[in-house]
Length: 145
Image (cartoon, rainbow, N blue to C red; front, side, top):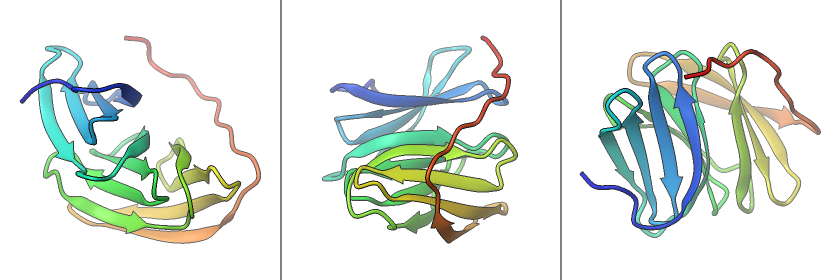
C-alpha cells in the first residue's frame, strides 16, 4: 500500500474506530488508522473522480460522491460496494449522514439536493431516494482527537 499520488480533495472521520478516509485526484479512496497512521484499505475508481466523502456515524461504511453524479456506499471491512444511486446530473458537492445514521444527504452542483433512507445490514445496504431538500445543517458535538 502507498499514499496518494495527487491532491487530497476531502476527508471524513470514523470516531468509533478512529479511522480517517481520504479521497484524491489520483482516483483513489483510502482508509487510514488514526493511531498508527497506517493505510488500512485502498478503494480504486479508475476513470472516475471522487469528490465528496462522509463516514456513517455508527456503521463501518462510508458514502462517496463522484463527479459523474453518482453516490456510492462502501463497506470498509469487506471493501464491498453496498449501494449506488445516481440522482445528480453533475458533480456531488456535498455528502452527509444524519447524526443517527438513518439518512444520507447529498448535494449536487446543479442545485439538486437529495436524501436517502439508509438501512444497513451486515453486508448490504438499502438506499431509497426520498425527495429534494433546500438546506441542510447538523450541529452536534464532535470528539476532538
